[in-house]
Length: 438
Image 1 (tube, rainbow, N blue to C red):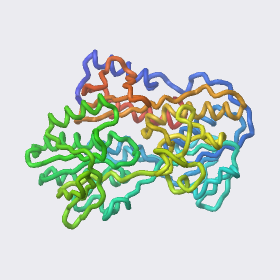
Image 2: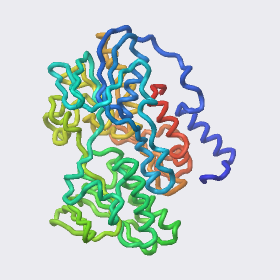
Image 3: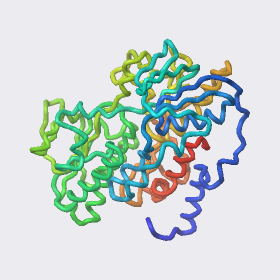
Image 4: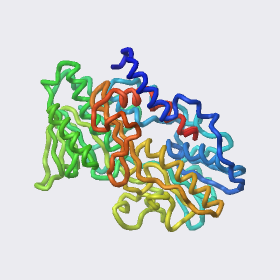
């Protein structure tokens, strides 16, 4: 499929996808609703995908507001592309750009991180010592990678001794491809899995296992390799029909798996991974180990009154919000978007694309003193790549119901269109999202 000419039906399907996604028609000329005139002070904590998207949307929806974006990283990472880099499909440069490119005109960018949230005083303190009072706050800090929860693990190990991880930034993805290439040459035991916490893009570890299998088959070395996948849960994917499909794919590709296995420690010297299981600790020898660290809200969020105080999202400090409106129940001027939001779904870029219009509309309604009509239904999308040239476009909501955008694509069938979307279309869609155009 990649590199080949598309037949007429395929071109038509691709154009239908592009048009529905807002890629074919120019977006900048679309009519805009009347902006709310206000002198409100808006602080957006976090300058990643969620923060940049919210800054762009609010700058269009508010006339006269003073919008401050707080985030230190100058480089912007297109994280949905990390698995493509790690499997040798994309160069690393394709997932790195400049944050400044996406900062909306009129938005003040503070190039620091958030040191503390003071919601009682309606104030945010940045790591550069600056203090920012607000009338409305958007928490979009993303999550932190808790490598230290795995004994013996340090991200500096990635790229050495068979240790890999697409979660360690662009360099980690690039190092993962180097480790994978060596593994494909030598063979041995490959170990994949996921952490017991909430995590960004829960499909990524599954994609990794299947892509690594496909690349080994392409290299003609699959017969020298064992591939294992360990999950802390009693399923491979939280949505039942997707779980059943992954079981089918793993069986067809001879990928072994085990439930209720949580990675707790590694020993790079002996290449041993230790898992917590119902039967006690279990040591597994590996030649290739893809580490997905536990994830949590950033420390400044966890230690603030914004975090959930009880319930399933309290332990890792996710921001407490109403799952429908994305508004904080105790601090009504606060909204959360993206990975840090304590909702049952929503830690993907596709979720940000759906959450941001809801949070922006509701924040504007809050400032206007009107009712909030916008609702987030938990929409999450996962282009679950199964091999180069094929993927499943898995979309679902809070209730785990499949919600396909394109009726001509079966979400549980490997298809060329989701692959082309991932390879060619999602980048432009993502950039349009950051600019607030969709």
